[in-house]
Each structure stands twice: as C-alpha cells, then as structure tokens.
Image (tube, rainbow, N blue to C red; front, side, top):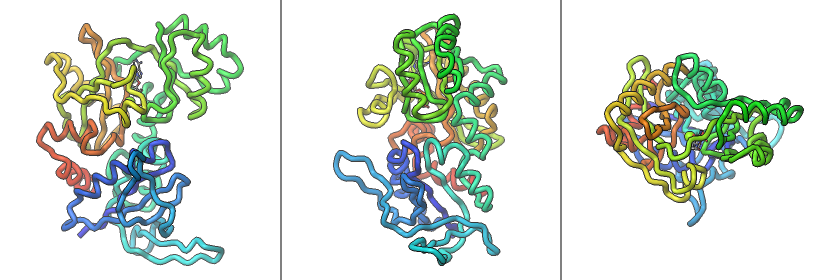
Length: 355
Ligand SMILES: Nc1ncnc2c1ncn2[C@@H]1O[C@H](COP(=O)(O)OP(=O)(O)O)[C@@H](O)[C@H]1O
Ligand SMILES: [Mg+2]
C-alpha cells in the first residue's frame, strides 16, 4: 500500500478550483492500492490535514477549512514523512504521521503550479505527479513560456513583455511601441497567473492604462498580445515522460466574449470533443503540442492550448502543467474520449510519478 499525499487548495486565486479538482480525485483514487493523506493548503498557506471531505454551501465554491491540525512534509532519517506540528506556541512538538511515497500537487496557479511546491517535494525526496521545478516555472510564466516556444520555432501571436518599472516610467513609449508592432485588439495578461484572472481585452490605447493596472495587480511583469477575433480555441492533453501520448482535439466555445474566469467556472462554456476540425489542423496541433511539451521540458501531464484561424493556421496559446482536473474539465474529458476514464487517468498519473 503506497501512501499518497494529495495537496490541494493553495494560496492562489484558483484555490477553489483546486478544491473542486481534489474532490473528484479523492472520490476515485484506488483505496486498495493507495492510502490517501488529504493535505489542504489554506488561502494563507498553512498546510493542514483534512478528512478529505470537500464541501461548499449551495452556490458557493469550496475552501480548505482552517480548523485542522498543521502538518508539514520533511525529510527524515526514515525518508520523507508527513508530521503534525503543534503550532500553538513556542517550543513546538511534532508527531510523525508516517512516510509519504508519492505526492500529487493538484494546485493551480502561483505557489503550486509554478515550481515552488515541486521544489519542496524534490528537496524532501518525495516523487510527485507532473512537471518538475523548471518546467513548472517556465509553464506558469507567460514570458518564459513564449520565449521557450519561440526558441523551438513554434507559431505564436505577436506580443510584448512589459515590466512595471518600464510601464511606470515610460507609458507613452510602451504605447507607441505596441501601436507600431501589434494590431488591435490587445490581450493584456499578468505573466504568472491562470484562470484568466487579471486578463483584459483592449480595443485601443485609450483602454490600456486600466488594463495594465489590473494586470500589474497580479504580477510585476505583463504580456500584451495581439488579439484574435473569431478564432477557435482548441486544446489537447499530453501524458508521458520520454514517450508522449497526445489526445484528439477538443474545442472550447466560451459563453462570454472570451474565456474569462466566469465563463470557465460559473457559466458552463461548451466543450466539444472531438472538435470538428480538418485532419491537417489536427495533425498540426498534435505536432505543436509535442514540441511545446518538450520546449519547457515537461513530464507527467499538460494541456496545450491553441487558437485556430479561419484559414486553418494554428498558433500556440499556452501550456498548463496542472490543468483543470474535475471530470467535467477539458483535460480529463479529452482522455476519456481516448478510452482512459477519470479513474484510470488518476491511476496512470500516480503510477507514472512512482517510476
Ligand atoms: N491573443 C488572444 N486573442 C484572442 N483571445 C485571447 C487571446 N489571449 C487570450 N484570449 C482569451 O482569454 C482566455 C485566457 O487567456 P490565456 O492566455 O489562456 O490565460 P490563462 O492562463 O489565464 O488561461 C483564452 O482562453 C481566450 O479566450
Ligand atoms: Mg488559458
């Protein structure tokens, strides 16, 4: 029996989404082979052992409850262990809760999908599901991600990276550079976020200052990108380490003008699987997805997202190293369409992590 620490919740704005993913994973983990330690990370960053029940009042999203014991993962003489920490006062005591064989960091966004938690897991020596430190931190950072895609010659939309210091000192110069280089509309995005948080669509330079302010609320680096109108949003799932497997293509039909936070989680947008695309487009996407996965040095899993123009040309939008993971999310649905159902997918990921 292997002991799996499922890490969920976390400090990012995607806390609740992670709880939803974790609830579904907890329901299907094979309890004959795995003993599960449900480790919630509160919004403040406290690690707490929960009973694995993830609940929310009607109409609300779940959160990690803050009333459980504090726990920590540490390297010990007997290998990586989960310990309970008495954090009531000074002179704290710890109690071992036993060894941990595998961790499943089911955390989206900063402090979870970005290599920080992966670094802790690597340091204490726990094998874990998904991308390593480097791939996670490149994958979360749209500036680093785009640079590594560009180095592989992957097609992308035009973009400019702007840091806060430059925007604050020379906004007119940045605006002029954007006007000269990128057709409108523009998408303004914090470099390291997720779930469309802090992203705005801007029709011209008049709307730029408020969009930049909004994006800089989330990160000190912002991407301004050429926006497409009427392009299709197509996605595939990838699994594997050296040998990669790629799903067929799925399509998102956003319920809003673009696939913003609400369209993602509150007003169900439509997912079409398989997407009705010409064979040539599907083949291009398959090739680019493998290249994108390798470009960041990914392992384990990722969802790679594309835009397809009406003329059949395809550009890579982004890679997500911990994609949305409820049974109704795109990544698990894509695998289900390949014959790998949700339970088998979780099994496969845990098995891959232990290798
Ligand atoms: N350049 C663009 N042109 C058109 N739509 C875009 C563009 N960039 C982003 N979007 C829309 O915004 C959504 C979120 O952007 P994305 O870059 O995927 O950020 P996140 O990492 O938050 O998911 C996309 O799913 C898409 O609907
Ligand atoms: Mg996205």
